[in-house]
Length: 194
Ligand SMILES: [Cu+2]
Image 1 (spheres, rainbow, N blue to C red):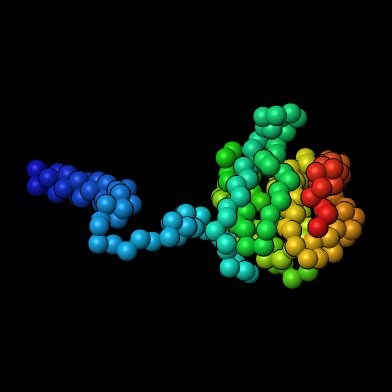
Image 2 (image 1 turned 90 degrees about the vertical axis):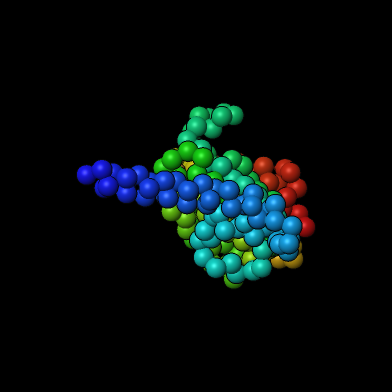
């Protein structure tokens, strides 16, 4: 009996050590003088699984979007924060599940030609590297009709080519009104002029 509990103890200790080793791996790597310096982007990229293979090489810029159950600045509704994003081709949009029950998906009919779009899992972060200039609408599927939507505007030639079709896309519930507000804000901030 004693032998077994000692064995159990050492297994537990071994797993603790493994955990500790795992946790301090980054420090050790950083402290090791002989190691070649690695680009900082590599580690953050592996921390979040991309929805799909990027359609374009990431340029290293990451734009973070929180997925929240209560908008701290107003309605108290479920929101993406920010819900209007200005980006460049190759930027990574990272959706963070700050609060539970949310996800992020692109909206069919609100993608520029040549962009595949994305679909994230509930409660999971998702990254999307924007591949071409244009207007990208996105939603949280469970809270789409509650108006949990957003817009990415990617600068560059042809960025307004899908603007009219994106604007005329119909939405359930509160999402239509929300998109009207977001498009109006984008226009007033000059985000839609090249
Ligand atoms: Cu949601």
